[in-house]
Image 1 (spheres, each protein chain N blue to C red):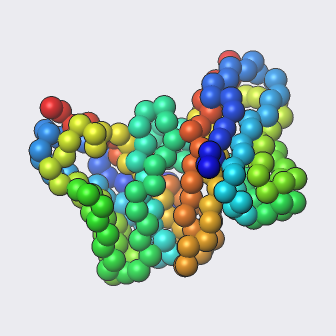
Image 2: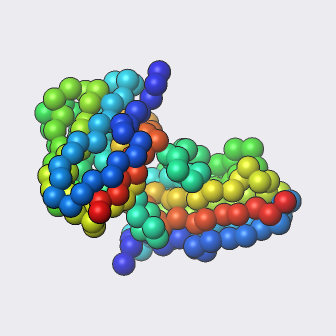
Length: 114
Length: 111
């Protein structure tokens, strides 16, 4: 299993540009999430999905769109990039383990918006 | 303010010494996760605690969750350079798959 994969690893955008961060998992997990990590802030949830065709907002959804057409893929779209979106983005998939979920994280995408 | 507070924010220890990281929540937690992150890499799952008073160990790392399920500690015994990195606690507040994370603790182990 490749686990959770993310592309690209690094990206530089100019303000106003749009792009899609790719995330894929091969573990057949129903649940997938996108987080962003900023210094001193830990990770904050952007959007999540509980299965194909179902998505919902997390803590910091503004400026981002997601869709989930298949179980494997969960892309994150930046509609019009802003410097405040400079961050490291992590995708995660999770499976139910009794009372709670075990989350598996991808290696991250480091995004800089100038 | 963040719902999960980690302390300290950073820690420098001499190789061979013990260290402890704390993670505190104002609300009862359904699940408490500990992750380790090396710079520029993703998060590595360490342990998950679910029950009040639970304690788990793996190699030289021990994590505990208090009886009220509002505070957890991560203890490393006889630290090694391989223990360096950022340690993050994450909490599952609603028995779902949405985690809230603490701000992280940066650990440096001096040889």
